[in-house]
Amino acid sequence: FSVGSIFGIWPGKGLLGRTGRQQVASVCTLYGPRTTLIIALPSKSRDGDAQSDITFEVTLVKDRSHWEVSRPEVILKPAKKVFAPGNLRATNDNAKYDALVKHWISDRYTLRYSGGMVPDVYHMFAKSGGVFSNVSSEKAKAKLRLLYEVAAMGLLVECAGGVTTHEFEDKSVLDFAVDDLDRRMGVCFGSKDEVQKYKDFMFSK
Image (cartoon, rainbow, N blue to C red):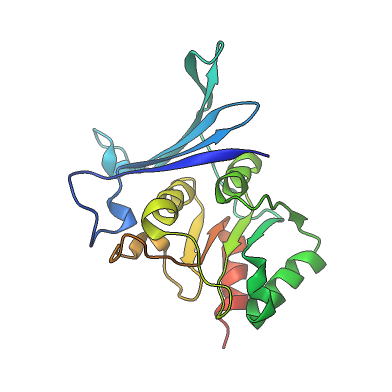
């Protein structure tokens, strides 16, 4: 079992009314046998004429006294049959989510579920792909907060070549404005093809 931290880095002051795309960086830290950080730097936040976003990993080494680049590039491949389904209580009264989870199981996806957002999303980075979902229903409400969790992790995923979407709306989580510091939403993050499969199930008529 591992725990972690999430950091979104925003320029200037004030956060209300801003979207996740205005972040200049985001970081996800995983604590366990190794202490590692994955850092996302959008092209717009770097000096010079950088053309692409970058995501890389550093690891705490030498008796936890130095950070060393352990992976100079972290990329999410378009497809990977690994799934991390959060808020499974919602499958009781969300028929589309129930059908999607059953599809992942019947199609022999590998289950990765710790109950924690950071370890499960970090696992996608470690395996270079997969899909993480946290979907709500009338009886099982959304838990992830846009400002404190969703925006920062969304930036990491998209800078690594992955895709994000709101649970019920075909729109990147980075395009939602923070209109309440405690705004919560369901999400899907991951490899491009895996998120498209989520959309096929969840956005169908």
